[in-house]
Image 1 (tube, rainbow, N blue to C red):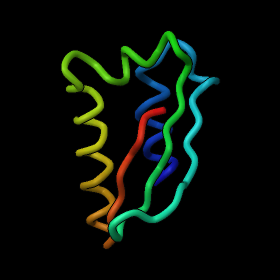
Image 2 (cartoon, helix red, strand yellow):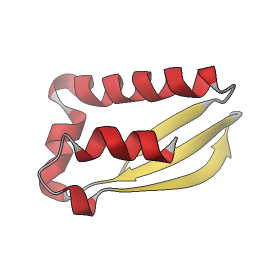
Image 3 (spheres, rainbow, N blue to C red):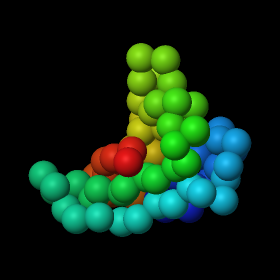
Length: 76
């Protein structure tokens, strides 16, 4: 899942070298992935009213469900 998150996010930001994804702890039977981007790119990733962040989460969750996993993405 980390590769999918990186693939999507790096294509949306101006500073792809600053994108980092770390696998975090389990919370409510779901694996948490911590997404870190440059401060100037946070607006691109969150989007207007959180639409971009929601879309990223939906795509990655769909791929995770296909693999029998539950995940959540936290944007730091």
